[in-house]
Image 1 (cartoon, one colour):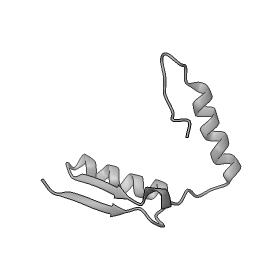
Image 2 (image 1 turned 90 degrees about the vertical axis):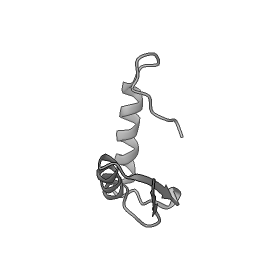
Image 3 (image 1 turned 60 degrees about the horizontal axis):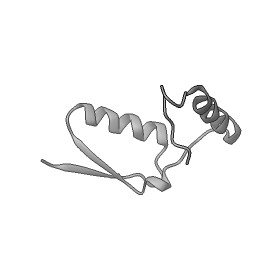
Length: 69
Protein backbone atom coordinates (compact mmCIF):
# COMPACT_ATOMS: atom_id res chain seq x y z
CA UNK A 1 0.00 0.00 0.00
CA UNK A 2 1.39 3.37 -1.01
CA UNK A 3 1.06 6.44 1.19
CA UNK A 4 1.03 9.94 -0.32
CA UNK A 5 2.77 12.61 1.76
CA UNK A 6 1.54 16.20 1.36
CA UNK A 7 3.46 19.19 2.73
CA UNK A 8 0.88 21.52 4.31
CA UNK A 9 3.18 24.54 4.51
CA UNK A 10 1.58 27.69 3.01
CA UNK A 11 -1.55 25.86 1.82
CA UNK A 12 -5.02 27.26 2.54
CA UNK A 13 -6.92 25.09 5.03
CA UNK A 14 -10.22 24.71 3.17
CA UNK A 15 -8.72 24.01 -0.24
CA UNK A 16 -6.21 21.53 1.14
CA UNK A 17 -8.82 19.70 3.19
CA UNK A 18 -11.20 19.32 0.24
CA UNK A 19 -8.41 18.01 -2.00
CA UNK A 20 -7.27 15.55 0.68
CA UNK A 21 -10.85 14.40 1.37
CA UNK A 22 -11.45 13.73 -2.32
CA UNK A 23 -8.30 11.63 -2.57
CA UNK A 24 -9.14 9.72 0.62
CA UNK A 25 -12.58 8.90 -0.75
CA UNK A 26 -10.85 7.43 -3.82
CA UNK A 27 -9.07 5.00 -1.46
CA UNK A 28 -5.70 6.71 -1.30
CA UNK A 29 -3.73 6.91 1.98
CA UNK A 30 -2.67 10.49 2.77
CA UNK A 31 -0.31 11.92 5.38
CA UNK A 32 -0.11 15.71 5.82
CA UNK A 33 3.14 17.00 7.30
CA UNK A 34 3.83 20.54 8.57
CA UNK A 35 0.17 20.92 9.54
CA UNK A 36 1.09 23.74 11.94
CA UNK A 37 2.04 25.88 8.91
CA UNK A 38 -1.35 25.59 7.13
CA UNK A 39 -2.95 28.99 6.54
CA UNK A 40 -6.35 29.86 7.98
CA UNK A 41 -7.81 32.71 5.96
CA UNK A 42 -10.54 35.16 6.84
CA UNK A 43 -11.30 37.62 9.60
CA UNK A 44 -9.83 36.46 12.92
CA UNK A 45 -12.82 37.58 14.99
CA UNK A 46 -15.30 35.76 12.73
CA UNK A 47 -13.20 32.59 12.74
CA UNK A 48 -13.07 32.50 16.54
CA UNK A 49 -16.77 33.40 16.86
CA UNK A 50 -17.78 30.54 14.54
CA UNK A 51 -15.60 28.10 16.49
CA UNK A 52 -17.04 29.29 19.82
CA UNK A 53 -20.60 28.86 18.52
CA UNK A 54 -19.83 25.26 17.53
CA UNK A 55 -18.23 24.50 20.91
CA UNK A 56 -21.09 26.07 22.86
CA UNK A 57 -23.69 24.17 20.82
CA UNK A 58 -22.26 20.76 21.78
CA UNK A 59 -23.41 18.95 24.91
CA UNK A 60 -21.09 17.10 27.26
CA UNK A 61 -22.77 13.71 26.87
CA UNK A 62 -24.23 13.84 23.38
CA UNK A 63 -21.74 15.88 21.34
CA UNK A 64 -20.70 17.11 18.89
CA UNK A 65 -17.27 17.20 20.50
CA UNK A 66 -14.71 19.83 19.53
CA UNK A 67 -11.13 20.00 20.80
CA UNK A 68 -10.37 22.88 23.14
CA UNK A 69 -6.89 23.62 21.80
